[in-house]
Length: 224
Length: 151
Image (tube, rainbow over all chains, first blue to last red; front, side, top):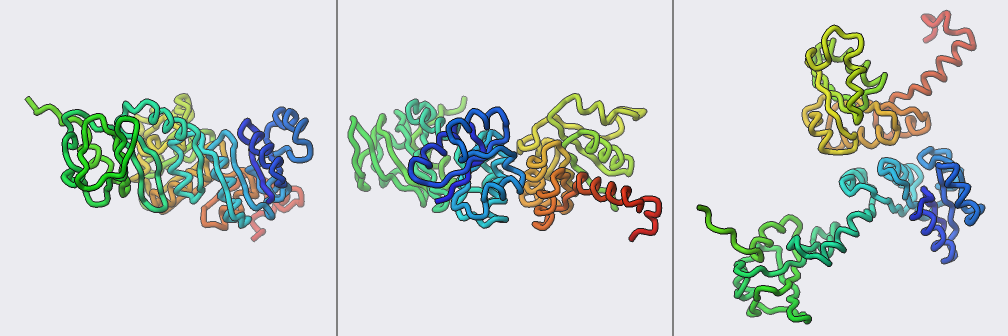
């Protein structure tokens, strides 16, 4: 496989190493002369110096025959542009983009650049998993399928506390797929009883989150 | 052109000049730039301040949707991308066109290669470098003196 990587930062350099190790043909393009010289000591002919958002630099690096283009510079607009021209101008089948600021993910999506990988997002999910104080943990987004899998801790005195799964009143499109209790887990039936302190895993249609989290959070104190 | 709401992102020499002429033509103009000092360019050479003249100015980063919204992108009839970054301009111009469906989007791109390809994809790109090349070539060939005759 011929892989073109734009950006020789920590991510780009290490990806190049791994991919070369696995017998792929790799070219890295780096725009900073100083960085290029450092990385060139190791990667030698596998790295080229130049601005990877300039079309002739990409062409010189052989983008037309690339099987995969990976854009991992520190600038989201550059990564978007590189992947966009790779796909639309040069017909590259597969691209992977790094998203530095998770708030820019929507731009990657809008312009058809996917997958876009955001380290901040990945780390946030790990944090949320370790420290479930946010109540709800996103385990998996299945964007194409328009589904998500979430994890919730059942709060004391929530509507779900003491309720059977079938009586939860979950909206259509939400399903409890597992209950974790006392270090173990099981797949519930309609009659399974839910208790405070349980962790429940649900699969949902996207957009149902709020309706569902209500069932597992403590009831709001009555007004007044 | 009828009076419209023009949004300009990037308030350098180019963006600020376009903003001032649009405002003096009577259009509603909103300018977005990440540098709060950039408003000085809008005030320069004017008898009243930019805001007293009715223009608006928002400080924010071009790629941030919140900044674009604060500057009124949802109501814009025309959008000019004139930051100093070609890639930023190309990305926000496409956001303006595809997400906010602004009918008139103009984008400054210094690199002729990118300007040409994105123009073929349906963006209205203005490439000052290409324009300079053509003018210089004409000047060297002595064509500029009879420019009126050149079609």
